Amino acid sequence: MTTASTYIDQAKTVVVKIGSALLVDDNGELRRDGLAGFAADLAMLQAKGCRCVVVSSGAIALGRHRLAKASARLKLEEKQAAAALGQVQLASEWKAALNQEGLDAAQILLSPDDTERRRRHLNARATLNTLLDHGIVPVVNENDTVATMEIRYGDNDRLAARVAQMISADVLILLSDIDGLYTADPHHDTTAQHIPEVRKIGDEIKAMAGPAHEDFATGGMITKIEAGRIATQAGCHMAICNGQNIRPIKGLIEGQRATWFIADANPPQARKKWIAGGLQPQGQLILDAGAVGALHKGKSLLAAGITKAEGVFDRGDLVAVCDPQGQEIGRGLCNYSATDVAKIAGCKSSAIPDILGYRGRDEVVHADDLVIDQQSDAKTAESKAIG
Image (cartoon, rainbow, N blue to C red):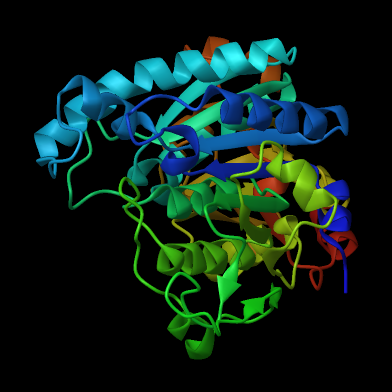
């Protein structure tokens, strides 16, 4: 069996979700010793060359006490007000703790539309990756201040899984008050057996989940299993482990008990599988022979290699990429609308700002968002174009 240290050592990007009860005590006070330990663990991962994202609960738990609502069930508008109060403090505390470890932090507030709608998905993905590329730790939370009950993730377990999916993370770590999945709720059943590894999330695994019992959490083991489903389908391994130790990730690497949900593909493979089979192209990009050859070598699609755009599509939509004869050779997510592609087709990337009036991305379709049909023959396409 592969060890936890192997999964983490091989990871290029890790998402860590930290629950409210680990950050906020029953009196609504921040657990600064715990926060310092989490920051030290993140610094340890960064020192290994791993990019880190934190999905941090705790905003509502911090803010509700300032509304004198320590125990009463909050109305929607009170939750939003508590979140607005708590998010300011939470971001400040994370920044201070990470600064102590020589790291910088950025706050990212997401709504479901940001991960579900392709255009906003690309924007959020680009922002997160830019921060990570600069060594900054994004601290993510749901935008509870404006979300309605009907349009919410509902818990930060699912949010963390969506973030891991969005940025093609290798490992997702859910820090909780329990050290993994059991055959029954160990809080109530002393015969419950710990499950160290899950490779398939079937009905038997789902039946093991019990209801949430934390005062401030909205999710329990059910939401963690759902997070495991989302993460593993995206090629991301996921661990559920006890975050009550001062250095829980260090402990996980050293063999602390946890449950690992194992993905059967890596993130790039899973993302490309989703692009290839899960969406319907909204338009076509006709390429010249040189661009076709470049794509077969794993390059991104630049405006200079496009001769024509067909169909009606917006930024973030799926398009078919075609050879000079109009035969589809692959599919990808387009960084420009059909209207804008028509204006920049055949032009150098450096000319895009002058043509469109804004600086977009150099790549019309990035290689990470592009799936090329290996059965198509680039050489044949090139010879036909020349002939």
